[in-house]
Structure formats: C-alpha cells, structure tokens
Image (tube, one colour):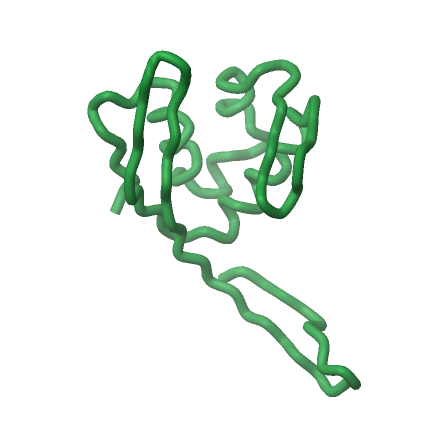
Length: 112
C-alpha cells in the first residue's frame, strides 16, 4: 500500500515518498532524489545526530532505508508556511544472526 500524504502536502514531499517506495532497483544512485534536496542538506536524526552538509551521506542512507523498508505507512502529516512534519512507520524485514560468543553479539544482518 503506498504512503498516502494529506492533500495539503507539497509536491516535493509527495515525490520524496514516491522515491522511497519505488524500490532499490529504481533508486540507483539517488538521481531522482538529489534534485529534491538542498546542496548542503542539514540533517538531524535520532541515530545519526546532527550532520551539517550531509547531502551525499543522506543519499547513501536512503539507499539502505529503501533496501530494508518494505512498506511505509503515514500516521500523520502536518504542513504550514514554514515546513512540514511527517510521522510514519516502516515495515522492515531483517534476518539477524546471533552466534555463540560471550556476551552474545549480532554477527550478521540481512534485509529480505
């Protein structure tokens, strides 16, 4: 099921989520996504923290996201004159291998 944003969503955001759902084979090197991003993207995320001038790194991160997330569901989106916020959930498929070690450790991870 495609991610459905509200009708108030700007076209750039609709294009962004279309790219996220197109699959890794369509993504290639992010050629369709790059024009949607600023030349010096200022990224802040819960795992990566704050990364200034992160356009190229973001494109690589999106490739990993697309390869891993099988479905995106928009929970809520809000849009105003100063920007947009989107709350979504993504269904991921992983195989995680934990092998004998002390303490136990994840030894491999593969998306399906």
